[in-house]
Length: 417
Length: 201
View 1: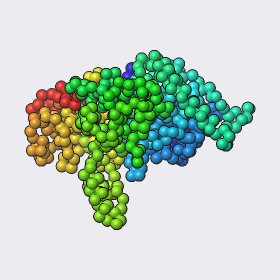
View 2: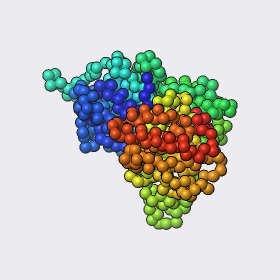
View 3: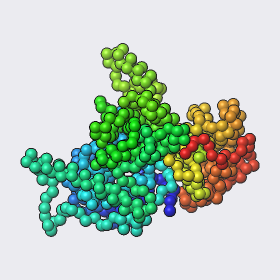
C-alpha cells in the first residue's frame, strides 16, 4: 500500500523498521530531513530501544557508529558532501575493522566552490574506503536498499553506504511503499556480530599491522567485498520475494538486450533516461540503459555481460575526475577488458545542473552515429569558459574563477540560476 | 501528464502547496510527484515548487520546463520572475490577487496561445477563513475549480492529512471559499485542463 510521502521521511521510517540501536549524525543538507525524522521518532519513543547520539561533527558521527557497532549495536548514520569527506579517516577505519554500519549519503557536490546541490562527487571521492556502495535509481529503490543494506552489512561484516541523489530524490514527495515491520523483521534477523567488545570476554580490535601482514589483511578485505557480488543479488532476490518488487541488486538493464547504444549511469537520472529511451525507441533508435546499482564491489563480469551486445557505450557521469574524465568510465572500460567497444564519457549534472531530455537527446543521437567525442560536458557553456580564459590571459592577477564567472552571468551571490 | 509550477516567496507556503497538490492528486487515485526548487530558501525570497500528476507512475526527474499551469502566490512577483516561461498553449496562469490581470499589467504579457489568466483573491480569502494571509491553500481550491485536475474533497482530505485543529479547519474553509469564488468568477475561455499536457512520460 503506497503512501504519498517525502522520500527523506520514508527513508527514516525504513531505517527505523530495521531497528537500529544507535543513531548518530551531524546535520548537513540535503541529508537533514532524514536524521531529523529519525530524531523525532526516538524522542517520541516510537523507535526503542535506540539511542540518538548528538555529536559535534561528522568525524564524531562515524566514530560513534564505529564504537557502537564494535560494542554489538546496530548502528546507522547519514551525511553528504563535505560531511562525508570530514568522515574520511573514520570511514576507512569502519571498513578496515569490518564493522557493519549502514550510512545514507544524500549525494551532493564538493567544494570549492561551495555548492549545496546534487552530484556524485562525495561518494565517489571515498569509493575505495572499503564500504559497499549502493546507488538508488529512485526512491522506492532507496527504501528497499536500506533494508537490504543492514542485511548485507551484517552478513558480510562490512559497512554499506546507500547513495541517493540529494534533493532530486531526498526532497521529492511521491507514492512510496514502506515494507511493514513484519516484512522487515522476517528479512532482517537481530544483529549477531562477528566480533564484539565485551568486558566479560575482553579482546582488542584495531591492532597495528606492519609490512609482514598488512597486504594479507587488505587482501582479505578485498575478498570480503568480492563475496558481496554473490550475496547482494541473492539477498535482493530474497527481499523482492517478500515485497513483490525488484529491490536493488548489482545492476539492471532497461531495453538493453537488443540496444546498439547502451547508456551506463547511476542514480536518479535513470528515470529520465528511461522516458527518453522510450521516446527514441519510438523513433527507431536502438538505445538502452544500464543502471549500476552496486558500484563497490564493482560487478565487473556482470557489467561485461550486460554490455556484450552493445555496439557503442555512453557512460553518463554525475561527477568529474579532474585531470582524467569520468570515474565510472574507468570501471566500465576495465569490465570490457580487451573489447574495443567505442566508449563515450558524458559529464552531466554537476552541482545540481538539471539533466534534461532536451539536452541528453542530441548527445545520445550523436553517440549512436559515432559523432560524439570521447569526453563531452553536457550543457557546458563554452562561451562563458572562453570569456573567462580570455580574461585570465589579460591580467597578471586575474583572481578566482568562481567569483568572476558569477559576475559575468550577473549573479551577485551564490544561488539558483 | 499534467504539470504545475508554483511561484511565491519564502514563507508563503509554496513548497507546502506543491505537497498538498500531490497529496490531493494521490488521494484522487493519480500518481503525483512534488518537489521544491532546490534553492537556499529565505523568508521573502522568490521560491518555486513543482508537481507532476499522471495516471501512470512518474519516472521523470528533470525540472518541469513546460508546465500546464503556473500558480503564483504573490502578485508582486509578476514583473520579477519569468512567470510565463514554458507555459504551454491554453495553459493556466493562476494568480493570488484581488486585482485583475489588466490591473496587474500582465494581460498583454500572457496574451496569445489561448492562455488563461485568472486572478483569485486568495490572500483575502485566507485572511478571512484562516486568519492569516497565506494564499497557498486557497489557490489550490481555485485550481481545483478551474481545472478539475484535483477535486475539492480530495484537497480537503489532503489538508486534513497535513494540518490539524484550527489550521486544518481554516485551510479547508479557505479552499472551499476559493473553489466557490472561482466557479462564480472564472474568466473561462479555455477548456478544463484535465487532459494530458505535452510533457510525456
